[in-house]
Length: 203
Length: 254
Image 1 (cartoon, rainbow over the protein chains, first blue to last red):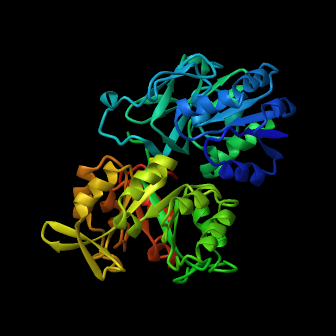
Image 2 (image 1 turned 180 degrees about the vertical axis):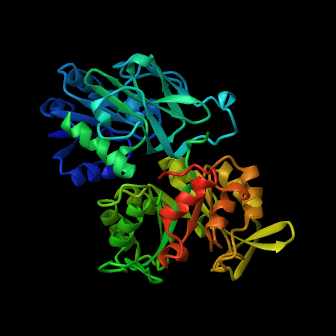
């Protein structure tokens, strides 16, 4: 059974639909004490980093997630859920994250853009595969997914499994041991996205 | 090299849960079924799908929510709903079943603060402000309502700017002059708006050929192009269009 961590940040209908489409058993879980019952976890999220961390702390989901990954079971963070895996974010002040992967979350730096672009980065963009990972099984070396974000992760290349280009190259997918994170929304990315979800189910 | 893709968006008119203005697909069991039609567009390479609820009476609200709920179970690309969105509750109900964005038009004109409230509560990324504009002189466009019959006298470019500063995440610009003509988008209007806002612009109204769509991206600086009948009546195949755009050095998702 796969659990979706429900901590009151955004609606989960699309994530649930995508897993259902593939035929996976999935349940929305808002009780931190029950996280340990799942085989795998999804950490979704839209909204602001600070609010999300506050909700995770108040619901005591933060320590439950950290306990879960210490048992080596797979976790996939999607969009804001990926960003929360890192040490900190500069979104509306400085906020501490879950600290599961070393790195930080920073806003798109318009001064570094090679041409004028709009922020948020919203739409279809390519992920360039940077490493062989079971999460990207069956996908080409570059593939389109749907993004909606204004901040992105900065971390050591050893955690990077995918990068994308928007004004400059940035980290769009990460992995450390059993922990995975992806910046775009696989649940809104047609076949490529469903393939990633299927790969996660099969981990 | 640009990787970030320009988007192609088919628009479906829905009335009481059914697709209207006939969709001409071969092999569809039911051309009025939003799920079937959306699935087909999804398979053909549409980057998003927009539903315009043209009935949009208050009783009809639940029907569009049902439509989105069913479509979102089968179609995994962004979905937008426009028509009859009047309160935060309408937005909530749609997002809650798998809708990604709502497009607000007359409610925003009546009460511009609705844009701020929607953006604050749900995030700018899901608030699209739809602007129906008609040229009234060489350099001036007004917002029109009631299908182009009523001139609000509001300047379209200043309204675009205002919608942007109030937190709209995207603008859907429909040229009431070009709409239905199949003679091309109003690229001048779109270009002028693109100069004053820093959010994506969806060009709408006037698509007749693949060249028109290319020009909307190049001349009009649009980020996405929306069309209805040329896709419904198979005058343009979305995949062929994308191949054509790619050959014209426009990044698209193929």
